[in-house]
Length: 179
Image 1 (cartoon, rainbow, N blue to C red):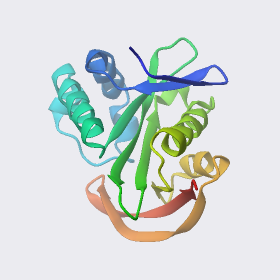
Image 2 (cartoon, helix red, strand yellow; image 1 turned 180 degrees about the vertical axis):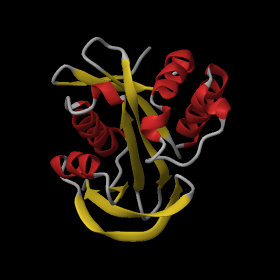
Image 3 (cartoon, one colour; image 1 turned 90 degrees about the vertical axis):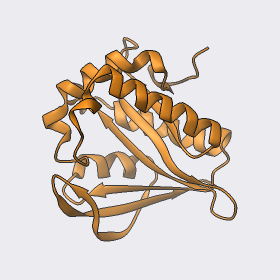
Image 4 (tube, rainbow, N blue to C red; image 1 turned 120 degrees about the horizontal axis):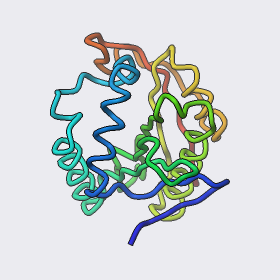
C-alpha cells in the first residue's frame, strides 16, 4: 500500500523499488541540471539498477529509522522529483537533514514548496522530530525561497560544506523547529 500525503493536489509518497526505472529516466534527463547542485554521481546511479539499489537502501534506512526517502508527484501522479530526510538522529537531538529536487521542466510550479510542507508535517506528526535542517548552496536562491516559505530560518553559512561539482562549496544552513 502506498503512503500518500496530499496538499493542494500535489503529494509525496514513500519511494518504492518499483520506481527504479522511472527515477532512472528522470535522473538521466536531469543529469546536467542537477550537476551544479549535487555531489558527483557514477554512471550506474542513472540506471534502473542503480536506482533500485538506492530504493533498497532507502527502505532499509526507513526500517532502521535513519533515512526516509519519498518521491514528489505532480498533478498527474507522475514522479517529478525526490525529497527525503537523511541523517535522522534520535535521543536528545530528534533531528534530520532535508534534501530535495524537482525535474527541471516542472520547476517554479510550487511542487517543491508543497513537498517540503508535506515532509515537515510528516516529520512532526509521524516521526515526532524536533528539528529539521537543510543545507543549500549559496547561489541556489530558488531553494532558499522554498525553505523560507515553509518556515525555515537561515542560521548561517557553512564554508566548504559539501564537495559539489568537484569543489568544496559553501552552503547556507536553514533550520525549522517542529516542537
